[in-house]
Length: 166
Image (cartoon, rainbow, N blue to C red; front, side, top):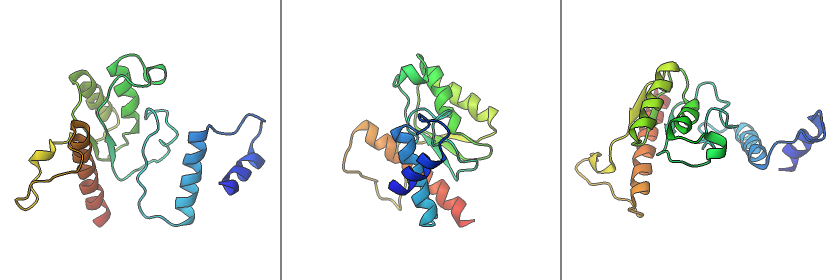
């Protein structure tokens, strides 16, 4: 904490140049990952995507977008389409992207962003459609959000693992 904080204090140009708390934690985490020579880091976007401080990676292994709603409208926009545009900002050229099921207007925007960014985009299947040698997958929390997020996490893991094995 203090190593990164002091470095930022020394290098800032103006008195108010320190990053917000979330941005600082992101910088600190990335410094720890670099120092520890982390092979794989799972980075969750804070708010948004296009302008989020975590959106600094040029070629992530894979990206995922969870179900969108009318959250953080003061930052992301007032409509599901505007929010989808912001969230689609994490997609990168040629990087596999996966999305949870979305409302049709949001999915249309995400598909447009994927085309703009030349990024393949897939919608994840329901968790009940996964085949694990004939076994049904089960998770502890059985709510809709949890099963949708589990499906997304499985697809991201599969894609990342496949990329890392090449």
